[in-house]
Image (cartoon, rainbow, N blue to C red; front, side, top):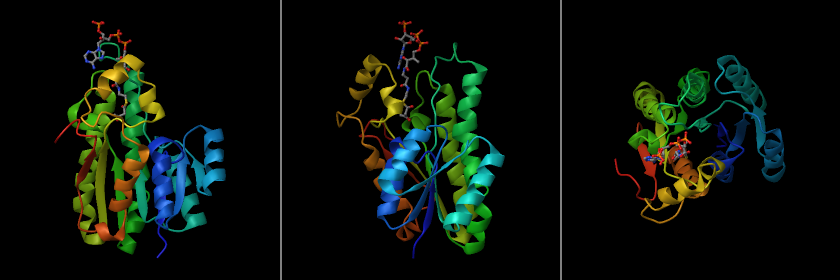
Length: 240
Ligand code: CAA
């Protein structure tokens, strides 16, 4: 059976690897993006995966975008809420705007992505929800009060949805990636990044494909008994 999967922030970084992995699993994949038209067009050209542009932080745009995806590709069976941003600053320098932008995209964006799809999943008695949280939602991080709050919030979302969706065949799980070789981590000052790598027992950054493989498993029909769980994929940097 061909499943339809939606991956937010699915044309770059970890999201792109997830989109490709789900496509390789036989899914029809829709990848969303927020702004980078060029990267999205290139991604579609290379993979054949359709991309859709909307701001996950806006409920109306999310609802309209999801309706378009379902009209073109069919009802969504798998949702990967991956879109996320950082606006790092030590707390004494963090502005209300930096706080709000991260909350809107990383936390409200998860609500906005899952909420419009949820009723259909309940009706069809099947759904796979995977939220991409972070090691920094588990352990906190200097200069990431905003980001860590959203990523910890993601874990509350999946644990609650896991209970609400269980009888309807819907599972909700999270992955907490550690530091992965993406633009987001490369934006961290080099000296800081080096000190972070020194704290990772495997001695390297993770690869996006290593996160995508976790998603692939949680999104599969076979993973129906795994619900409300968190997979930590961080090279041994932090144990829960
Ligand atoms: N722990 C303790 N102290 C730290 C620190 C840390 N991790 N990082 C910085 N500091 C210290 C600095 O040494 C400096 O101290 P001094 O003033 O005594 O020299 C002070 O904190 C920072 O002061 P600045 O005024 O220089 O800070 P800034 O306003 O320029 O901000 C920064 C710099 C934004 C904090 C920058 O260092 C940075 O980006 N750090 C990385 C934060 C980080 O790890 N983000 C994760 C991004 S990846 C991601 O989020 C993906 C994921 O899910 C894992």
